Length: 81
Image (cartoon, rainbow, N blue to C red):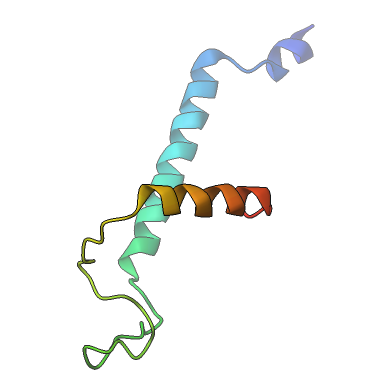
């Protein structure tokens, strides 16, 4: 019977273990953020955006609701979302 009691995990032991695990994961995640980005990011050299990315901030474009509805319906019907 004493062996059985030794194997039981008390609430206090569980909470200590869970807290230590959470603290470890948090610290490890914070340390990886300190390293920064190792890869270089492609940046456009002129206003033509050589990399094909749109410029920020995006310009407002008024959408035609009927055309948007048609595109969404056809896209769903084709299995694209």
